[in-house]
Length: 202
Image (cartoon, rainbow, N blue to C red; front, side, top):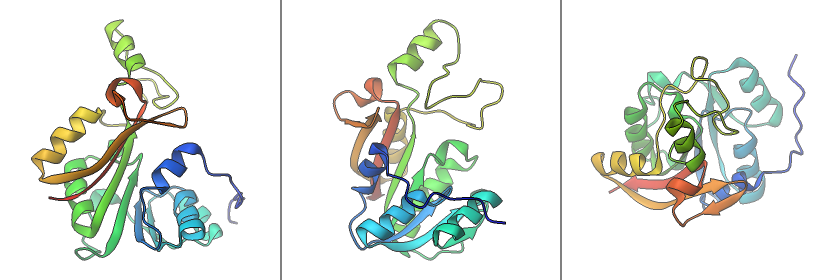
């Protein structure tokens, strides 16, 4: 039996900010697409097409219930299934921090898509810095897990990603933070809980 899926979910402000980075009519690959909510929005509201990639059985069923094309695949195995520039945009929304092969997957994102968009928790956000200064790992709305049971196998900041992009010859097309539904472009590394980057091969 498919799970009950609310097909009329109102998009969050964060989702709208991310969606605006995807040109209308794009062919999209959404890596770690979850229940398919963002891809469904892009298809309905921005005339996009494409596929989600997801490993979780319940999430795959939710995508099917939404009518979103989904491929069940472990991202740790790579993207050899897809050719170069197969998609206009490849999304990694809150996925990168869960991957052991994060740098490889970043390069694969740039290979498979003409542009890539990544979103991840920003460990440089000031409450996180304050928690560490007090001797504890942070627990926040964006990083809600205790250090001993977190699914995040790595943490990073906006500046960390900028350095990684430079190391892998990726051109950053846009970068900002997200905090409580607002885009943060002034000191985002300290003032935003989520990092957003749009990039392509340099």
